[in-house]
Amino acid sequence: MADLGSQYRRIKAEVEPILHEVLESGRYVLGKHGAALEEEIATLCHAQYAVGVNSGTDALKLTLRAIEIRPGDEVITTPFTFVSTAEVVVLLGATPVFVDIDPHTYNIDPEQVGQAITPRTRAILPVDLYGQSAEMRALREIADRYGLWLIEDAAQAIGAMHHNQPIGAFAHAAILSFFPTKNIGGAGDGGMVITNDRAIADKVRSLRVHGMNGGYYYEDIGYTSRLDEIQAAILRVKLRYLREWTERRRYHAALYRTLLADTELILPTAAPYNYHVYHQFTVRHPQRDLLREHLRARGIESAVYYPLPLHLQPAYRFLGYALGAFPHAERAAQEVLSIPIHSELTEDQIAFVAEAILEFTQAEVALR
Ligand SMILES: *Cc1c(COP(=O)(O)O)cnc(C)c1O
Image (cartoon, rainbow, N blue to C red):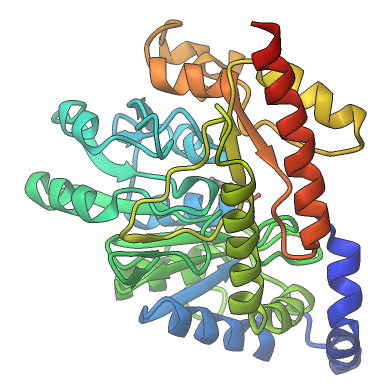
């Protein structure tokens, strides 16, 4: 599903001298690579500010702190996402309010967002799942109409576009993750907050160093959440390959679409106004577990993102949702399968995966 070792070998000659220089410099946090990476990401996203933090999860948590999400507040989000999205809301004492997804894009359904707004709603937190932007333009209209914050979880979508605008453009703030397997990943954890709102940027900058504002003077209860220089240096090298690696993912997606066109498999839906960066290439089949077994027997890895929606997870049972609450998310959780798409794959490997899938779907049809 990812081949980070071979990715590293391709950029090793560029990375190693810089790592050496960082180690020799003795400056390991809040140094020049962190600041430069912030500038480069801000430029990429046409945003005024970018603030590096320890992880994508912390980027979400510090952003929600910056907009003063508090106990009693409601934050509308999707149940079909990585756990962080809802976890941070609960950690701040607020309540995640789930609404169902669009069954084609797997992203939060704006119409249902409108219906979930109450007097306690403070923010909408959509996710750009699998590398495709959520319906950010429509969601911004809703947020503006009701005076809500719109925070975009773009952890899976660096480089993506929506109506010709980069991720974050329609939100008050967006977050990125540099977890190793994300489209641009470090050799450890990292994350970033992107915003045009100076107050949010300043607050996150302070919260990442314990709420400090000036030397050992604290205006807030904060966190230890810095992006270190080693990670920033590696990420800066990788960022230079973002376009090439993204185009490679998109090319692999196009190959799969051609090779798998004549099957009953449901392929990913990419809206024409979205530039999808294919963090995952996620297909759908009613016999998903059998398909996965079939691929595994041929030495092909695959993954299920995500096997159980958040409203049905034991940790989130206290929110009181029942089975059947979000039928599209629940059905997707049973049928989705992500197949290898990363930039290090060869055309032969893509063809090999597609052939194995065809073998399965043809055998399935023959059985009927
Ligand atoms: C990866 C991810 C995160 C969390 O990022 P970390 O850097 O692992 O903390 C948050 N939301 C989504 C949708 C993710 O995929």
